[in-house]
Length: 387
Image (cartoon, rainbow, N blue to C red; front, side):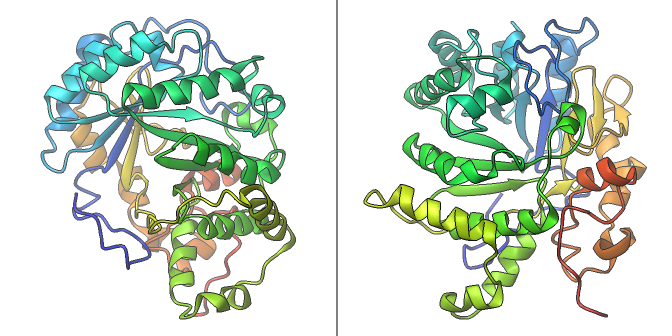
């Protein structure tokens, strides 16, 4: 895919998202030795005997490669994908097909230099690790196991030493939002290629945590845009980050941004703490990475450990099974996925929003709160212009 020039506030796909996905996440197993409080999958300690076999997994990868150029990006996740002994074989198969393969493991004793080297030799190019707190107290509480924060720091450096691109994933809740500046500092120190900030969707174990209010989320997204010249940032389950990018780009003078978008108490604290933490150690600024126009079912799809296909891992409405039907047919033809690509049919504010075609709202959050994946996104505070 050729990226849209940086001067555009949002990158657009150069292929039809209804015809092929931009990225596919495959949950190769649900087994994981951590007990994360926000886990969307409610992961288990042992592998499910009905998860896709090696050959079935290879068939799925064959299907993804069959889309042709540009082929989807493929992320192997879990649970913990390192629980699968055939992971190097799957990575090598996908790589041989021309797929870009990435890994999203848990930080457990299975994450070793030896395994990372083997998977890198098999063709994996990127690894994402989770960092949900600026200290062991917060992060280890999220992960449910003591010592994981320290192990994550070691693992992150090991990932880069082996030669991978490093992505850090952070789930934001009301309980850790004030740690974002300190997490940012760590993200920069680790040499992170991409920081993916996940906005909590109340599904799975995440129902027990407190999500940000819509107004707080808006403040955090503006802060993220403020710091996006320090590191490439992705807002996960907050597609209205694209709306904010477009709105901010329309302000001719950057000095006028605070007038156009008044700073609330949360953003003021995040800004203050960021400035204090980075004082005297300001990293080099770069051209901000514009967010890309991808959403649940529209350029994005998720396959679980037994082969069920979903619009995303946070939207638990199955649309088909790769055991019964080729993935391309499911992606192109499933009724719900087609509906998710028709923002004019969304309910409430999302359906009448002037940014609906490039944002579309978090379909996962809409479903988690209302039971309707086409409903208005309650995590977005924006009031559409009257039409």
